[in-house]
Length: 290
Image (cartoon, rainbow, N blue to C red; front, side):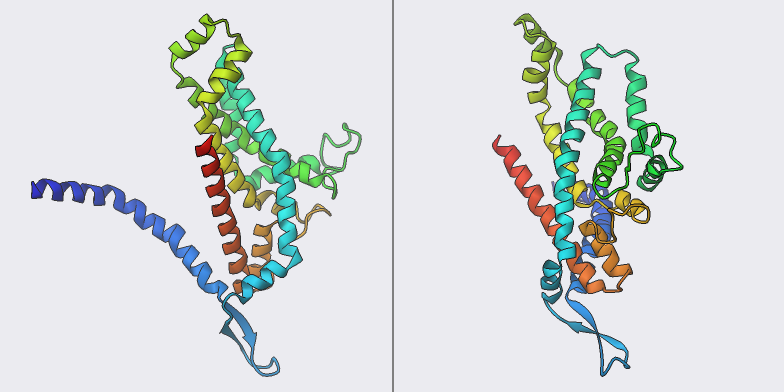
């Protein structure tokens, strides 16, 4: 009995050990180091002629970060982004998945692949592709659309949302489509026998049964929105509406590599991580009560 239990524990360690090692190396260790950096600040000694030294400031960097309007204003951008992006993403992916699952769409495999292909493109490359399509004088579509300024202060947010939707809608559609395919056929047959049409079946039967998949993608979409960085970073030098501290992630990057203030950058990163954790908890609790 003891040898059997020991073999089971050894098997668990053998298969689960690599995961925990990687998790500690790429998640826990960087977070711990960011927390450590956030507690210190570089101070110049004397009249500024001496070298800088690290000084323990405790929560001072956190207080300074929260007082910095450049950091807090970034969350207003994220809020506006979420208000546009999340309904388009979730609604569009659900609509496409239901259409493909309904049997009305022909060439189903082709459209699955075509819609998923943009997700394979790296974010930086996707940003550059759309930047080319947005730039006046270069883009083949700007003049056709009446010279719309896609990179202006009032339109650049929508332009970035468009890039993100193009990248991720196919990914979420595949998740929803897989969940729809897992619905037992007898459930759908019972709905048809009760006289439910295609729309009634979609909204009253299919959507409630894939609610878990929808909540999961909603959670990932919210967390991803908080981490918005790649697309606006690509647009930074070409748009008047995007600045180096446009989002909280860009603020942390600018503090670290623009101002060489790693303590402030660490504090901003930890605050952003805490907010993501709180939102994850709220969304999870909300979904469990439904």
